Length: 260
Image 1 (cartoon, one colour):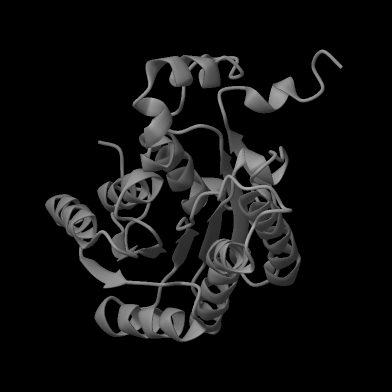
Image 2 (tube, helix red, strand yellow; image 1 turned 120 degrees about the vertical axis):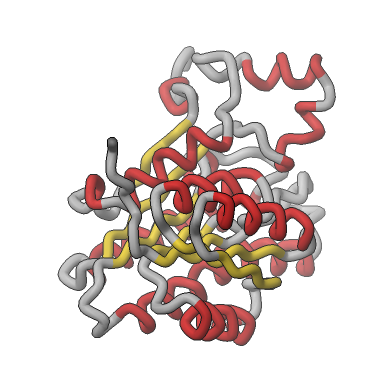
């Protein structure tokens, strides 16, 4: 019988009420980890994630989190410490999608919200995670969920693309700072995934068909396919992978420059 890969680990997975975060929380639990589930608005989704974690035989707590505010992040990590113990894995998954508005027309409020949620939030979470695990003699793992759009900008998505590009470089900087502290830091950069982020395209077959044409494999990823990669990076199997980005995109990045 294959042994579980994350026994005695404690994971904080932001935005784990649906999509990639939920799939990752469930996958981690099945590998033996206890999980702190966070949500912004969908408490029902978070409770469903909690139920599935507990059905896998692991402990779970749920917490509402607006990660754009440092005091909220600090409160979350204190609650995790009190109820589960010192977190050993952090998955920064929570984010908001692009506004679909040009730079010229984008409001300050929208820009500010995207940058604070998608970049400041992971920064705050990394700070609290590192401060908590330092001195514990435990190996730590940080996985930042970026996007192919850390490399591929889109018109009308400056808020999202800039934040994800910034998160990529936060990861690389942390990798240099933490290399000798037993804390691995990496990105997972998904392409199109079957999550609520892409619901409008999923609901329109013609739009969906058009969007997947740029993907060599001609399909989107399932959330579980991202979660399986997160398990690998979080486990001992991935301990020498550090400061890099794992693209999970059906070959999309291979199209850069094609036909130029």
